[in-house]
Length: 438
Figure 1 (spheres, one colour):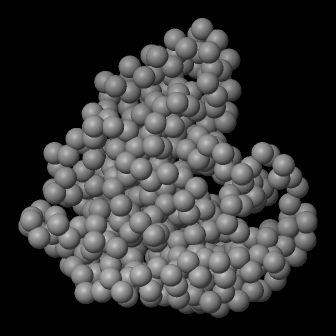
Figure 2 (cartoon, rainbow, N blue to C red):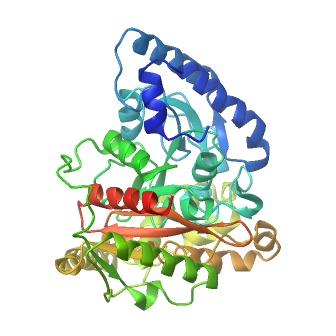
């Protein structure tokens, strides 16, 4: 089941395959692989099959809604689906039932997608490993000895293992792109505020994004069209890439890379050189300060932390409490600085159209190593999210696409980012790169 959504949609439309068959196939794979990968918290078998039968009946009547009609998709367990629990991988929310759909789920339903259930994640999305979860750690589909990344680890490993055709994750510092890179799939963070976060439990509202996780860049575009509605792209953007100007920020983003990641990134840049007008170095000023994110996360959790601290995993509680000392005055100041940095970054795109970096500076670490040395967990996560976090601060669209495999068989990712609102261009260029390395 490694066909893209685009290819499968064509078969569904022509009634060569059935949504019920596809859904049963995904459910069978979940039953076989989830006990090891730990990608799903809730599998909505009954309702998924009901939705698949409805989709099949509609398609048989000639009422095909588009490329997601009858396609089995799942969402990170921080996104509300009516009638299912939204645990955020925490004992605090073990029994928290959603009474309405998140906006993105409403849109997926409107497109005719079949919803398979809710995926495991790093507790409350506060981490980049998915090692910390009330439901146990998520494992990497490419090699179960390694982490899947996070916080959308269950969503990326599920797509990589073929348990679903696509999923939706959230991304506050890289939580869609970083695990996508570690699991060898595509992860897209749209422009800030392009996709509604209504019905999604927040981590830090100034930085939270929702994005698709898929097997191909073309599939990411299909999901973006569904969840964002109009994203300022009427397909005027040419698929020809030859006039594009590429910027490479060697400061910060290319420093202290794992040797295999560095080699893969240079090889990717050689390919990109042949696809575009030019590739040149650019300088990006990165502000690594995380005070605002920490303060916002504390504000979200303050009441719960005072009422039931024992229901959090100890490390999540420590992270949340670390943001409890910032004054309102300071928070307002940081928010206005954030707004200014989001305006200033746009000047970079006077000289280039897209920015290219490795998604993560290192491949996935081994799960047992992090479990044996818990004090190493946070430093590893900060390193894994180093190259993705700045794009959340700037609010720019950014995608991770696979760009190679290490000698240990671990995937590596390439990050492509563009100006605010250039989501269509970012995704199309990712698709052109994918084609070029096939």
